[in-house]
Image (cartoon, rainbow, N blue to C red; front, top):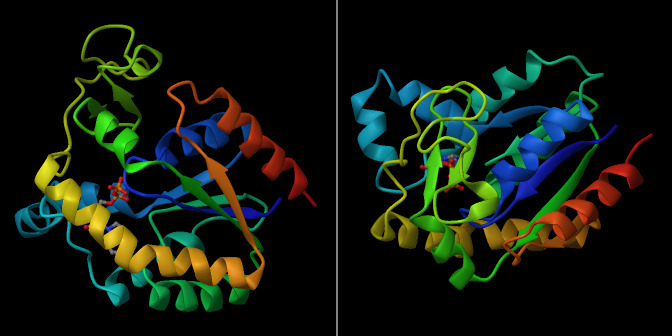
Length: 216
Ligand code: ADP
């Protein structure tokens, strides 16, 4: 099974699709955002930095990811969520992945900005298992108000889920990550998934078709 790189604007649905692949298709996830937020729980400087929406430098992030990749056996397919976000990261990641003999399929989740903003203020996450919910969208509400369905922890709003930080993250996405989408398109390994509906069933179906086509 090939590993998956998800590219998406912030709140594009990477987390939701990753959860599905982890729970139903045997994937393990490396999420740079989750790794950084865990680290920030005991690092106030990093916590403040992340709340601005700015990018951590390429070298630091690649070191973290290379270390995580080396812990996972080759027989386990991986989801890379949150990396690469810049062309430089994409090129270095290619070298790391080919050194490890990991084949990847790159999936770009395409969502209109208006829909992303609608999702923004309702997102709540579980800090323990990282599952994400939306308190305004029926399909993504927790069963019990403000508690994680899986581990019953209180849900929290991410420090960077506010309009000001979102605009920074979205602008960084257009400026730095859209060239990465073009890069993989030129290499011929990009699949585009539309994800504008509240009901994500059809996007999920398309995702599973891609995963199926990339079994080997
Ligand atoms: P989102 O859900 O908004 O896409 P993530 O949870 O993936 O955000 O990442 C949160 C923050 O962590 C980013 O705004 C950025 O500061 C930092 N970060 C995560 N991945 C990277 C990366 N590959 N390069 C640089 N910074 C990163």
